[in-house]
Length: 292
Image: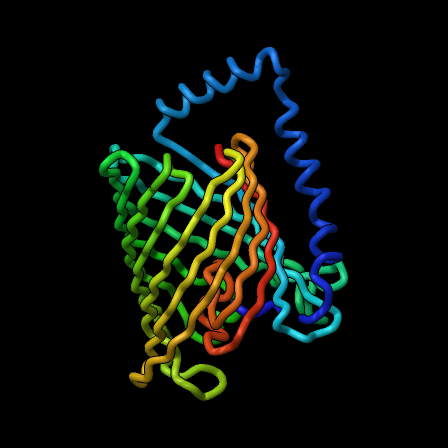
């Protein structure tokens, strides 16, 4: 799982991604003419209610401004997920993803490394139970399994992650404002007791997060998440780290574009999860997702 990593003006770098989002969003929303859009949406909504399957496709580009490396590196990730509704509360989900790192617009690789070896592959399986109460609120419980395929995982001897989590979401003011809390515990299955630097490998993670979200102008959403994580190592030592995440998202029907900023000692981006737990990070990310 590695690190992306800088200290220059963020706006020129981020704005070069904006045309991509505008073009993609405009292409998707222009498929239907105004006269047929309403009927198409009603038909799709009806089919969605009948189907027990749901899916999503996401792309993200991020960089860490806590890294002073020059030239700057960027992390690009593409992921997809598929959920199957077993009943009205229980669902089974699978997810898979690919990620790579670029420098100056080129995939970063060593002289003896192939392009295939630069790709970080991820996959996960989860079982979730969710239930609404009092119409506006909900709670959930889930269990997950994530095998680890990256080169870093192989070298350090990390095989997989087993996790359980629980969440509570409260909605207010016709769900314009929501307050969410979650707790989780994860166990890292290790092959080795020590890492390549001679220290003990991490063993168990305990996390708590608190998210405040405000929806405005119907399709915009502003969120702030505070998280804290305790990491237990194989020698019994326990370390702590915190994280703040601020994000702004805009939705067009099934398409969502987002811009987020995360700072702290850990992130939940599916990449920087186990390593660099004691390092301060400042990650900017642009994202685009489509829900089927």
